[in-house]
Image 1: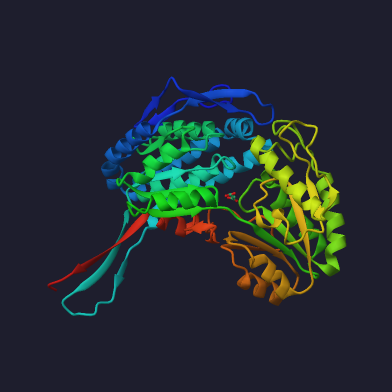
Image 2: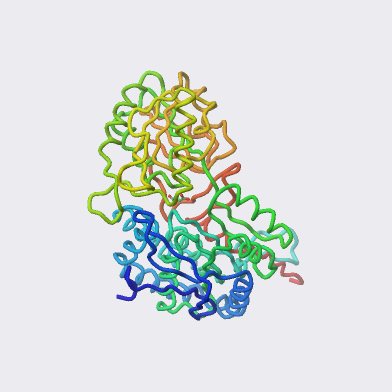
Length: 481
Ligand code: SIN
């Protein structure tokens, strides 16, 4: 096996070379607190070398046919699947999520590579009916150029392939700066890409703790024509500003504050299953996790009790242990944030129905929690929790629910549960969100467009829209006819 948890690349990857550095930083297993490896702490200068490499590789890669690029991507996809178990174990070791979720993420991540390998062949232009008999109008799609990707720790494989696969399929070259908490999966992916035949310089991985310096270098360089970022709205706004001087195209997948609405006529079992899936996936550390659970008065008590009973069944522990459903949070800052949000909510009148404290499994583990009596003045309502706390707010009317749901600057995901198709459709239309799950708590996959409105971001990933993000439309006017 090329990649195993004991034997994986721990050098950065620039221009087809594995790059070391005296300055290194530790990668820590959040379940145990122990170092599992160290990787190079590269600098802004190294990032510029990666841009040199990506720029040098661009002409040859973009000149290949979509079919030729697809063949390379297809090999990468197969190699990722071939190493599924090793990658899943590596992910659990550096990120903490339960092995079952890591296995799911490897398949999810690989699916973007397969999908975009095919979709790259369909980067069609148009012929447009002319307005003058001497002219003909045509559009063609061309790769945007060198891309920079800044990726998060919560999905260490899928958030990379969701960006790299469409970029490469479109004919772009790319520099990835993975999150400092989870660089190992990024390097393992690069190793498999190299083996698949991705040419030197087409994919580069810059590991660093200097997110600010490297981010600035990527944003400031005019050769980088596109930045794609998944992370907080706060950092996304900084990057947005930094990209203004070189007028880069941007995809920003930023924070969310997802409402999950349970109407009185919801199927209780379905609603609990949906809320569990949406809330406790990755220990609550996804941008699309239900952040505010709005429950209509007629079903509130039954729903709260059923949700608490389901949450109590979750097994908390190290992700590598059999049967575990809920792993640790990523670091001490994450657990401190959950504790502070809980303290504020309880102090303002919230009631802990279950959980509400750290778990004995270790310093970064938090019990699956259900909090009732949540009100709009609590910080937990306006901030992204990023932890396993279900915050239940009671509402009376449909209009009140929609108003509450939309009363946030964010607009990534929203969910609703109702058996009434008219009510569900009306609510789905009124919700200010890029994605709406109706009677469904999980909807992400490679064939649908993922992304938000308002301060949750710009652009879409996955689906045909996800390829377009890496393409420019060129209009050609053929005159003298
Ligand atoms: C995210 O949290 O940003 C990604 C979640 C997903 O792809 O479903």
